Length: 251
Ligand code: ADP
Ligand code: MG
Image (cartoon, rainbow, N blue to C red; front, side, top):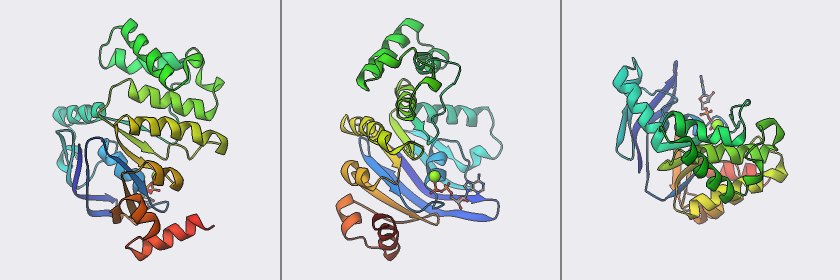
């Protein structure tokens, strides 16, 4: 579903990714872990067309994004990025809801504007999604009237309303108070169990262990290793994985 090949990314003279690869199968839940600054966000942002990269190829469900596209994006390049974003919905640490719109309006905005859905069917669909994540009572609330956990669930609902083939989560619980982390992770867990292809950058190791089909360990722009959670968390191959895990698991 998602293939990243020989990805090179520079931030000015900083050569962050030196030809990294990753394959994500349809329905797979892949969790990205690693220290701050290791490149998890940049990796997700490259897949979603939010960052350009200098070399390599990214394929999301048949839509190919090449490095060359982004240097001087022409009409065709912008069209590819648009299509990639339709394939892969993204949820960020900050909830990014439109503050002047209700939860329902936030969710139907893109289906109506971008997918040209009829307002009544977009509303029906939004209501069904809200029900699924137990947020139907908040449909008419504005973002500032919601808790952080509710705002993030609404942001997930908004991404789902575009019927993506895959979902990318960049530290979706990092700006939440601890008591709200569980409700957001539980929505993501349900998505994974329903077979959604997901890539999730997180520091929630318990969650990673529970939902990941595969864990990918980033360090300094490199992928140290990938493997099933049982392997990574109990018997990692790389010394740097061991060091990272011991830092965060035994504070
Ligand atoms: P993570 O999400 O794992 O914390 P990031 O992808 O945010 O890591 O960052 C990886 C590296 O790239 C860091 O060294 C960071 O300083 C650098 N970086 C990220 N975004 C930018 C940017 N917009 N400009 C310059 N350097 C950046
Ligand atoms: Mg990050």
